[in-house]
Length: 313
Image (cartoon, rainbow, N blue to C red; front, side):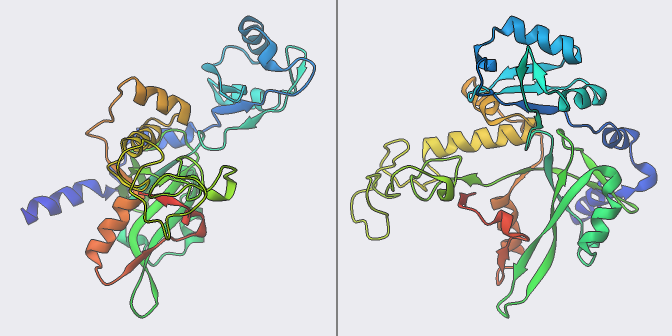
């Protein structure tokens, strides 16, 4: 059993000479694919134009694009078919005689993965980023642990951000070929209104008790019976048995696996789409659970403050 596990590890981390050409080609073909055109507040906003006019205007300006979608906000989400077309879209200033501003989508042009590589533990972050720059790695964060002595220590687990809409299956680290697993962010729940998909810092709703679901007080001193504010079930808002929590978690997994927007992920979840059982995924909660199991006397910490948010795994 042990020999089989060691053999699997050796096969997973092969030398650079065995790196598939497809892995290198995926990095070389990097370009910003997704763009947002806000619904301008002018005399003729894009939302007032017919889809025929918009399609003709886009085709006349940049050619035939891969996809065009109208978001709930009224903004247009455009997927470029090539790097050259992406550059043309990025410099557009008008569409159908309407002034516009174009920006690259904040998240759809990137992807995050989890790698395990003990050889990186003592490497400097700046060195790692410089060496992985050709593989369009924009950031890497080590999951750290804190011992009883208060000293933080690195682990062999890293969260890697790629400037690619689709996550590569492997990454070349010096002479190693390391598998990349899909990273699934923790499910975000507002500690103020108890709803999902946003944090309390940006929440404008009333305070809702996480225990009883009533407004006007927190759950700190609440002695009422449990009632979920999201599904009205007889449990608290932070229960992982909540049907709404399970649904939102499924949406999060679909978004991470397929690299789509939240609205598209919700549509797929509602249509009965199931995640692939063969794809390797890691949520932050799962990563922390594995580390805490390996180091029972240590407390897991995030590498950067950007990971410290109001969330549930």
